[in-house]
Amino acid sequence: MNYQEALFKYLLILGDTSLILGQRLSEWTGHGPFLEEDLALTNIALDTIGHAKTFLEYAAKVENKGRDEDALAYFRNGREFYNVKLVELPNGNYADTIMRQVFMDAFRYHYYKALCDTKDSTLAALAQKAVKEVSYHYRHSSWWIKRFGDGTEESHQKAQNALNDLWRFTGELFMPDEAEKIMEEEGIAPSLEKIHYLWKEDIESLMKEATLIIPENVYMQKGGKQGIHTEYLDYILAEMQSLPRMYPDAKW
Image 1 (cartoon, rainbow, N blue to C red):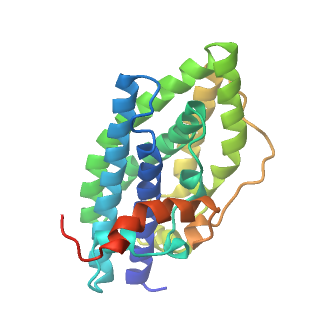
Image 2 (cartoon, helix red, strand yellow):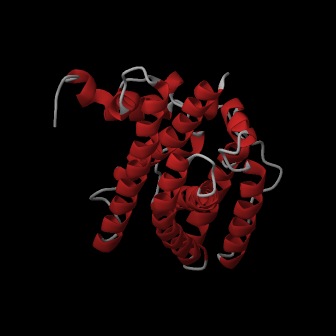
């Protein structure tokens, strides 16, 4: 894998993870627990899809094969997507969604903050904008986790169940793909080992405050960054890509 190929794959990992997460969050539009929260999660979904757009737009330029960000989003199949598995899981109940979100928000906050210092000026500019938005997302999801965990008996149990179910998907965030290793060696990507330390410190502190117990000795799922996914991704893509594939020449 040469530098251009590694950078392209790296950008797809970033872009695909944001795109699928944003798509999942958008499913809550009109279904939030109350109006203000419905609007909040919808805005977070829009921010997240916006991050995906910028990463995929840059990826298209790096690839230089005539594809744009829309082509990358709507005309690749599941094996060509490199998002982590965590973001493609079903929304479940609101505690499930928020638990997934806090895992991703903590990761992306520290990751984008570190990415601001990359040697790649384009990525640095993208990260500087994204980290401002993700810092709000992180405050939002953290507040909900504390409210669930230290709330009623039912809300506590739902949060604990979500933590138990989703924890095994968090490890993949910190398992570097070959492209990520090359980008880290080149001074482009942050160290996932360092991000993991910061993430774990934050999550452990948050779960303790929320009176939730992190599972131990869990086998971590992996494969998403290599295009190996759960059965859920194909359903997401079928819905997300149906209109562009039906009318590939349509202009909006």
